[in-house]
Amino acid sequence: MGDTSPAGGTNIEGESPQGEPTVDTDEATITDDAELERTLGLSGGLAIGIGTMIGAGIFVFPGLAAGRAGPAAAASFLIGAIVALLVALPASELATAMPKSGGGYYYISRGLGTLPGAVVGLSLWFGLVFASAFYLVGFGYYAVDTLAELGVAVGDGLVIPLALLFGAAFTVLNVTGTENAAKLQNGIVALLLSILAAFLGYGGLDAIGLVGDPSTPEQFAPFGPLPVLSTAALVFTSYLGFAQVATVAGEMKDPGRNLPLSMVGSVLVVGVLYVVTILVATSAFSSEDLSTFGETAMVEVGRHYLGSIGAFAIVFGGLLATVSSANASVLSTSRAIYAVSKDALLPRRASRINLRYGTPHVALGMAGGPILVLVATGRVELLAEVASFLHLIMYGLICVALLALRRNEPAWYDPDFRVPGYPVVPVLGTVASFALIGFMQPVSQLTGIAIMIATAGWYAYYARDVNLKGAFQ
Image (cartoon, rainbow, N blue to C red; front, side, top):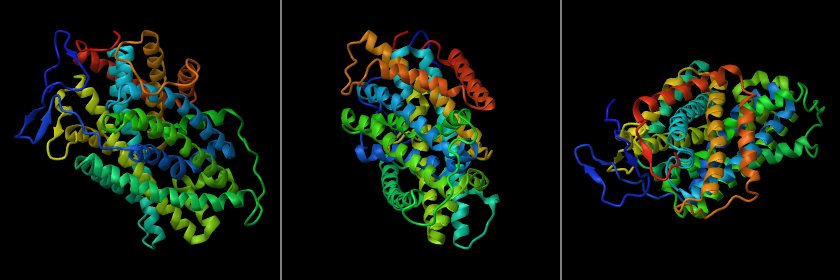
């Protein structure tokens, strides 16, 4: 099993260390009680949230979503944004009370106990792995299309190799420092938002008939209301970015201010962009046509509005967006592993921090390896829905954890931000999160359930004697 499992009801504090860290100079790592440095500000938090969410929602999903729900896919993205906000507010309160790496795992383990925390924490690892693989496959498609727009036709056979290559590169980048990854993220997001503002501004004017040729409106919900909800379940992967902000809470400066602004702000900004994008896309082409374009449908939308310049702008924007999503997801996956390892739910070796770069290099390796395995499958929709399933379970339990902590009010619970509309908001967040799971494809539900059963089995085998101080058992 690697490191020895804690025995005899070992208590894991889970709070800031009181002593000096133990240094293993042979492996150039800080071990055991070391903490990650707080180097991320508000711009870094927003860049992680927006940068993670913007890739799938705008550049990969429009063709898939329109094929399922027609123009009403815009409503699917709106439903996803509402559910995300209902969870982002409770998560913001919990994050300011417990600004630790690990995000939802940390809150649930302290609010609901070790077993639910272990299942969610280990499932979060896999959920982020599925999401990261989804973003990387999307990156592969856009990389191939970028080459095609430059006159280099390589075919779809290069999609997966490119995704694998850059997945390994992002893992190495994150090993060299969180600040380096954040700088890349900030630059990409700023450039990406500039491209989108220009493109969606023109496309929006065309959609309402102020410029360009008039088009015949398509029926808003040609397939009825049920596909709108099932599509909302599919595209919810687009809203995982705010939770990924929480996974790096232990590295945020002034977390009481920056965490809520980063989480809620990123959902609001990206939700508006998603809805406008679908309306623009379905104004340019019928839902059937968008569906045939697949993962890179937005390239054809760009070509429709602005010719070859528009196509290149979108294909370059898609490349930036999927790079951003993949980079942020690799970062967040490693922090989820780091958090459960520090609590001894995984071997403690996984929480070791590299002395030179100050990053959890073992956890990054445990993130990058499984991501590359899933990338090789190329199953875009399955990857997206399994990621959504596992995150929605966590989101529902985050809201339950808030209700439990508010009811018990332990002495250490002193958040800088309180949820407006309590208890209605967390109750609605719980119901909406679990309800959305019911509209997923059966294979995605079964895969998610199998992962949760496996994580519960790991807890029973390896970590059943762990007691987390501050957690309600």
